[in-house]
Image (cartoon, rainbow, N blue to C red; front, side, top):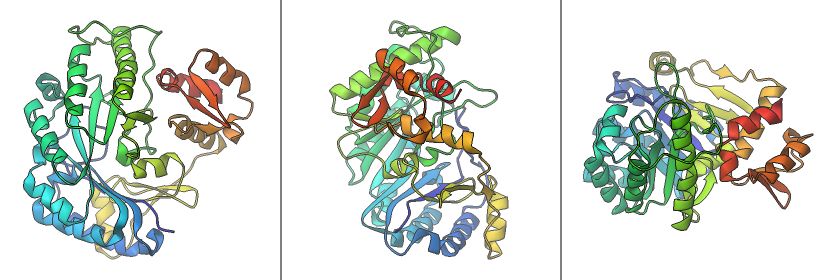
Length: 389
């Protein structure tokens, strides 16, 4: 049995204000690719002999690699992909052109994850993005005309975002008919902003759901999302409106932050959320092997130095206890459309809470499984706290 593979590319041209993922704005891409080649060779037994069900190249910004380094990286991965593999590469709009698309398709990639984030120039500038709205639209058009399946990312709650600007960004992306759409709710934190988990780290650092103070509606179009309760109300209303908007256009929500057309789910995401084994390579990458979580060093130097000497870097091993494992089971199950089996050990004794949630239309029992509704996903953090208290 072959495993899904995630490869972390740790380079970015610049850091965006919202991003908490490991990345460097300097470093030697050639040394990185050479180290990854060694890591792939040393981990070949973990991957298995057959073509992989999915390969996901994330970051960081894989598309910012120099063309020669990117071609060598893709050449390392191409032999692992078969005709039925899903092979995704993350790209930024300012990197995307016909030459990059040709490199990806020639190497066998068949899916592109495009970090649009917004189509509003002001929001993009405040977030530190290198592209503007016109550049994002041009990249979407290029990607939509290519043979690659298209997934697009948007961020709900960027500074200065209004209900109207959010609607325009969402509708503008859908003009290009992506197969898959990820909508991450921005969380305000200390220092750098936080962001909801993207496809490449879906379960390694799951993001809190938006937790509104009540059931308030979003501000009228044209009003700025403010801090505190007004901002939370904006996020809550816009999140539920997004569900309705996408549902009407044939996009099903299969996870708290992810929608797709029929059959367009991201295989890497599903493997992580369903608790299956997968292998992560590259600095700061996480793996799940034989029920154990492992983490590569979150440092380019600490990761690549031992590899260039011919040995694997040290791994951080899972140190969670039963309580943390139960919380993870609840989080991974309830954040997905599939939900959790009613007899799952993590739901033991939760009958009264689930009945109350169902009465408020925040959860539903469908056959032998419990799942949250969009209104329940909006309150995922609070629901998890109740279930584990």
